[in-house]
Each structure stands twice: as C-alpha cells, then as structure tokens.
Length: 612
Ligand SMILES: Nc1nc2c(ncn2[C@@H]2O[C@H](COP(=O)(O)OP(=O)(O)O)[C@@H](O)[C@H]2O)c(=O)[nH]1
Ligand SMILES: [Mg+2]
Image (cartoon, rainbow, N blue to C red):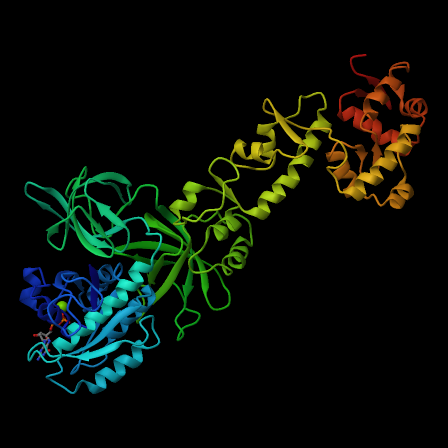
C-alpha cells in the first residue's frame, strides 16, 4: 500500500480529484457535503494503475496494490487538520487550480510539506477546462523546486471533462514506484508508531481507531501502548482499506479494533507504539532550519510542535545558532513518542503570516542544562551531529547509557556493552579507567587498615550510575574482592619501561638507605616527574608520601618498626633522627603515617604509634 496526501488551497479541486481517481467520497461529514468544503481529513483509495494508466499492475509493482489518499482541508482555519493528515504521509498530490493560480494556502501547504521533508510528489493543475494551465504550472513548479519535493512531474487535469486523468494515473504509477524504492530502503525496519487520526465505536466491536502507519508492522493480537499515558492495549482486529488483515506494514492506512481502552479515550494525535521502542519525550533538543527568507526568526516562547497526526504545545528555549541552524530545547506539555532523527514541524499559531519551521529531533532525552553556559556547550556538541544521530553521538553527550535508552531513542546499531547492558562513550570510559586507580589509591592511603575501597564509595566518587560499572573498570592493578577495591602490588612491567627502569634505580638507592628519598636533582637525572612517580605508586612499585617524595613500598611498616623503638610520644625531630633522614622526607612521611593511622598526632608537635 502507498499513502498519498493532497495539499493545496481551498476550492482548488483536491476532493474532486480524489473522487475522480477513486470513485469514493472523501468528504465524510454531512456538513462538508452541504458546504462543499473539506473540514476534516478524508480517506479514499484506488488500485495501483499500470504504466499506461490501465487498471492494475505494471510499473514494477504487483497488480492490485492500493494507493490510499488522505484528503486534507485547504482552508486556513483547518491547518491543524491539514497537518494531521500530511504529517505521517511520505508523498503528496500538490493541487493548484488553473483558474485560481498560486494562493496563500498553496504557499502554506508547501511550507508544511517542505518542513516535514516530504520528498515525493506530483503537481496537479486542476480545473484546466476553466483556464490555461500554463501560468499556474510555471509558477507552482518554480515555488516547489527549492523545497524538499524538488523537481516534480506536472499534470493538468479536468475532473469535469476527464482530460488528463489517464496521464495522472500513469504519473501516480511512477510516483509509487519511486516510493516503493524509498520505503524498501529503510533497513532495519523501525518499530511501529501508528498516529491515530480517528476514533469511534462500532456496535459489537467496541473501540476502533484509524491512522497512518508510516513504518513498521502492526499485527493482530499484538500489545501496543497508547500514548501519552502508555496504557497497554491489545489489537483484536485489524483492517487495511476496509479488508481484514493479519498484519499491516507501513506505509499503510489501517483501522484497529482495540481491547483494553474505552471508546472515548483514544483521540487524534495519540499514537499506538511498540513497547520499549520509543522515548516518551517531554524534553527534546532540536535543530531548526530557518527559512532562507528569514534566517533569524523571532520565535514566541510557546510554539506548536507537529509530528504525525500529533500536535503538542512546546515551550522553546533557544540554545544558540551555529551559524545557520538554530538549536533549541523544547519542553512539551504531554509526552510524545520520539526517536532521535525524527522530523518535526514547529508552528507559531499567533504569527500574522507563514510561520512554519522544519526541525530535526537530535536528542529525545537531553541532559539537564544546569550550569551557566550549558546552552552554548550544548550547541557546540549538537552542531557536529548528523540529522540522524548515531549511538556514538548520543554516547558522546551522555557518556553512559543503557541499551534500552538507546533503543528507545531509535538506535539499533549499538557498540558492545562495557558492563551489563551499559554502553559508554569510549573516551569517557578510558578516562574513568585511568581515574579509578588514583581514587582507590587516595582512599587506601587515607584508610590503610581498611580492606580496600568499598565499590560503592568508588561508584559515588566517580559519579557513576551503577556499581556494575566499577566492577567492569576494576582491571589492571586494581583488584576487587568482596566488594572492596584495592591496588595490587604487581611486578614492574605495569608501567612504561622507561619508568620501570628508573624506579629500579630508586629502589636500589633506597635499599642502601631506606628513608633517603631521592631528591629533586636525582629524580630529574632519572627522568622521573610527579606523574611518573604517581604511575609507579599506582602500580604498587613505590610508596609516594608527597608529590616528589617516594620511598620503597614497605617503608611505612619499616618506619613504624623504627618509631616503635622510641619513647612514646616522640617529636618530629626525634623521629627524623631515628629514621636517619631529613625534614624534607620526615615531615611528609609522618603525615602519611598519620593519615594511614599508624601514628597519632598529639598537641605540641608530638606523635605516638597507635596500638602501642
Ligand atoms: N470546472 C471544473 N470544476 C472543478 C474541477 N475540479 C473541481 N471543480 C470544482 O471546484 C470546486 C471545489 O472543488 P473541491 O474538490 O471541493 O476543492 P477542494 O477544496 O480543493 O477540495 C467544486 O465546486 C468542484 O466541483 C475541474 O476540474 N473543473
Ligand atoms: Mg476538499
């Protein structure tokens, strides 16, 4: 099935054209027929024509394939209905009357088509028995060319004389061949999101909804969620264009008989979605493409966001412009089921003229903008994203996400998990891995008698959402045992070879004189700086009591043994002499022993060994 919407100014012959093509009446309401004007959406369908405009088959498609039309109102008062009809549909019959020419709603509908990014369409010049179709054709083609539709075929017809209708059927055959190619190109198939445009009760059947399914498949018996409440409903009957079917694949017009929902609940703009596959978004970051004629539009604080048949009030916060596209955060009154990469339309209903903007959803669950300058930072980040963001883009921003979050944002190609179902930004993960040893070393230095750093403390310290991530990060010389992390003393080789060799030289010095930590000159000669010493300390090769004061790993115990020989309490000077070292080493060493709770600091420059 193919679904095509009409578009164009009121009274230009859209409904008449649909009637002529399908033999069905698209204006469903008595009031519409009485006033001769489409108010709400109309639905009709025909069998796919052959290449010569003949009855069926041909042009690459199987015989009997259906083309469904969604006929929209042209009157400016019914723009929301027009957008609900056009929103989920991939192709358009753009109608301009030969005798009417290009009109305000022609321009407005074209702006909507462009904002929605509709790429397939035909220009139909109607009422060509009443005037020369030439001028209207030329003007309309010129208007359409720079939009998402680009170059389209133009066909002039008269519904009264029937002239041009065969040409139009043939052109429709070519249009749906192009559609077939682009619909088939979507791999993998996205999950179902059916935009509801009507809801009613059928006696004996209960609640029935109809809508356009742009992609994915709905099946009889399937459980879906009704947005915005996410209430589960079961499909207990399915029809496509009046025929019962077991399943329908988008693009399709479908009618669903629903179980689990009262008839008055579903309404136009709600959606039926596959559970777990969509983000019910209340905040989203978008990229708005301003129209060429108005590169810096003045947005009101509240706009209407249209997607599919849905319309939501959205508060707008401009994040910045960079330099063409505008980046904004939208806050919705009610959640909408969205994916990253969704195309949405923004409209200022209070504006005097045309105020329709196309936008792309970049992030359907953006992080809070807490700090000052967060908006500008967000623009720097988002301006590098493609229109259909990847898992890498989202991870670059969020750093860590569960697979379920990425899937709900529409991502199906995920990087491998780092732990459980967690996915990480590679740079962030590497930074965490580099940071954990220092965090553990600090903790263990401050509490050396503890069995190690509790994994929960490490999780909190690195601000991670789950302790599983700590387990996954604990590698190399960090070992986790019984919920505690500690630094394993491993042989040299876990640091760069140059550092390892220099450390061996230091250890050789210290073997002769255990508290004569190498001085700045000696360290410089060995090529050891604070970073290298820190790395060696993390690898358990050295005990680092101050930035540039390094001792052998057993120095603390050795110092404790020496200090135990002294009368308690003892002064700094007594300790320095007993250890046979300088104040440069003695003071940070004693402070280290205090932190390690080997010694206890007393008033008046005195210390004593604990548990003495
Ligand atoms: N002479 C002539 N009248 C037409 C043609 N197509 C539509 N009309 C008339 O134009 C008026 C508006 O048509 P309608 O289909 O309701 O326009 P819509 O508002 O675009 O749906 C109706 O009175 C139609 O009968 C045509 O090809 N030739
Ligand atoms: Mg009409």
